[in-house]
Image (cartoon, rainbow, N blue to C red):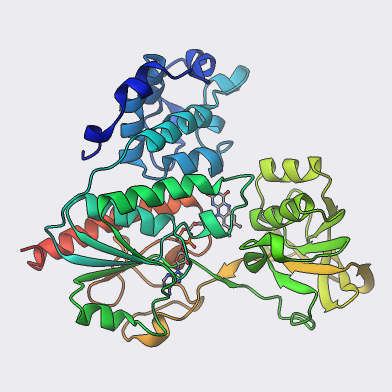
Length: 430
Ligand SMILES: Cc1cc2nc3c(=O)[nH]c(=O)nc-3n(C[C@H](O)[C@H](O)[C@H](O)COP(=O)(O)OP(=O)(O)OC[C@H]3O[C@@H](n4cnc5c(N)ncnc54)[C@H](O)[C@@H]3O)c2cc1C
């Protein structure tokens, strides 16, 4: 571990008031911890809680970070209700332990107080394309292992969705800055504002001596509705809006189409930015909304309205034409939704934001050869992250489609190992 030399241990371990000591004391430190089993990245929860109780925050932070370089982020944005918190035995008869709050306290302090020392690269030159959760994880693990890593990102700062998607009220940007600073300190070279594809192609990277390239470029094209009116001036896509909500003038009535977490982020951000009336429009029922219960409850409590069983047919400058939906039983007893065929409504609003998922951009694939995608445009890889192109590896949303931060980190850890093995087996590290 490279870290410990640059740590103010006195500060971390003796002078900090433990905000979650009460919560940690409630933990029964199960021998077979269901919370850990429910964690997609297998965080050693009882071990961390024990260290926290003993005021060994540095040790706990180190274990958390080594297992999950985005531990501090996951502590904020994972679906804890389905994972650690949802599986806590204490939750069977009462209040489950809020481990994520303990994890957040430890991980934030660790990142604030530890500075990773520079690692002099002795191994092959690697290109990491995309600085979201997947790219940050791969860059960190390979740089720590002695690889000469350059990270390219199309945006002006790294973070991907963490910085340009998830709103500040859920994930403060300052935390991503801390991660970025650590990568710089370790010696990772970062090329911001550099989209791989149009000018620098993947093949040019290999010509310049990169021995392997990792693609973690996510899904940054909005999925469209394919109906009339999507190009109008009062219509926007969620992924564009969330990049900089402050620059949009949305008027007094906003309709958000879609009911996933991205739609909730749009609705809640718009409300915070002063739109008095925000309505989520969704073609199915409340129970079928893909957003997490937590996000739905938050949205409701903030006054977001819901118009259900309505599908947009046309977007106009004064609102949306909607078809009323009904539930019908399909073959094999399944239930489907379809237009009633008779009922149509008009919903008047100033602005419409479409939040019905994202798909990958094609910049990289269209400027190289042998990099195969599936019919949705997602990169094809095996379970170790090998793409169909020699020396090229991938993971994260660009492979799986829109998923979660922790899933991106879990697979990025596997791919970092694959890249290391590939370089060793091909003699690139000498
Ligand atoms: C609004 C929103 C809210 C979300 N909320 C949550 C949540 O609460 N919890 C959760 O777990 N997950 C959430 N997710 C999902 C989660 O953020 C993603 O699954 C995760 O960020 C995927 O990581 P990634 O590294 O694959 O891609 P991304 O985070 O998309 O990062 C990809 C990076 O690649 C860069 N890039 C793209 N193309 C190029 C190119 N050609 N050259 C160079 N750089 C390029 C981009 O600039 C970006 O920085 C949310 C997603 C969205 C859109």
